[in-house]
Length: 255
Image (cartoon, rainbow, N blue to C red; front, side):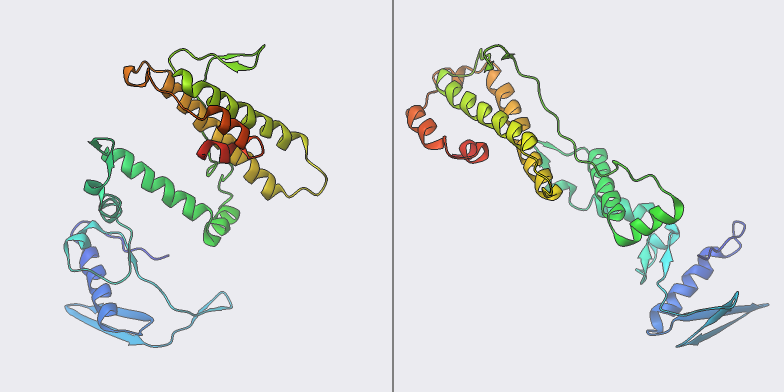
């Protein structure tokens, strides 16, 4: 990694601008040598370069990286712009098109979300794993998925949900799906034969956890006082339960 350093006004940005301009105009060149002699600037380029350093030969194609905000106000350059200004601009490029309910998304939340995605992509990439091994970076639980499960009132002796505001017509079906989801969770955890695929086990558990979390959230919303739902009812409750006994909890929920 190389860096251009110097006092204010020494010409760091001018030199960086010169390098990127030469590279842009010289397609196929792998390196640029710039020498300054008084008021003269000599530029030398070549299509193949090798460096002899500590008895090792390094060769390859190099990519230009720059991070000076100065170049944000110049014409676009080839290479990877790592400046914070550029990252923020890309993260907020469509914020006016994204809406949360009836309000615009908070820019800070949008930036955090984009940054989390960027971190997860890097951590799970091949180069990210190499960085973690070389620099011993902490990676455990950085990309762990978590869900929020809302607490609902349950009579544990009867194992029944204690409904208050949920319309009567919905209660039997919700209780049926709740019981089926819990039963499936018990079966998944009990039936773990030797050689059971860990990937399949995690998929089954994730699906079950997600369904129960969503069901609890659904119950919380139904339990809120809502006069528009007071007369709600379902005509085919008995038929629904009969036809759903052989189906999974997830299939029953979507049916």
